[in-house]
Length: 201
Image (cartoon, rainbow, N blue to C red):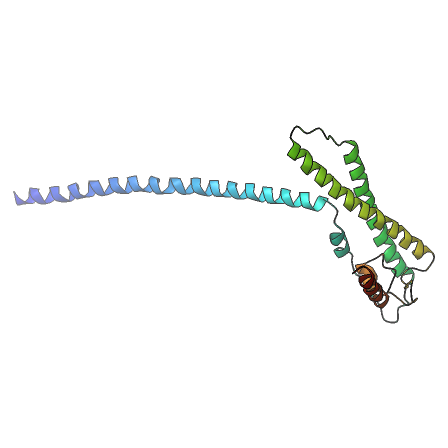
């Protein structure tokens, strides 16, 4: 009789342990895969939006960006000022600058031709007119700059480019790279600015 009681006890204890382990395993693994997939898709959408915004900004011309993109000329020891290489360097700068400005002028001309000034709302019409006048002002300033660039190209051909129009000394390579249409040295330009302040305040 006591031998039969010992056999029944271990069989009852083993069966509930197997059921609990089988239920816990699939519940933990399923939600982790879904969350990672959603996060990765959200990141890709956000990166696409950022890149599209950046491309729109870089399409438009900006004077400061163009001047900053100019590669500095590698000066050598005892190199003659305004030699053939230096002239070629500034010729390329002025030509590319002129090309970009002309493209912007053409874009504005196309906008004027395609301009539809029929707006149902007065506030929309007012904002459109304000933006249009601002754009025309910038294009007028660029038109003056185009004439200065063409004058600088003519000076390059006549070997007058790079020399001060007031005193005749060298303007300098670095100053011309910062402002390729400069016609005066730093000293003459500062004196000119002082006289302008005294006259116009």
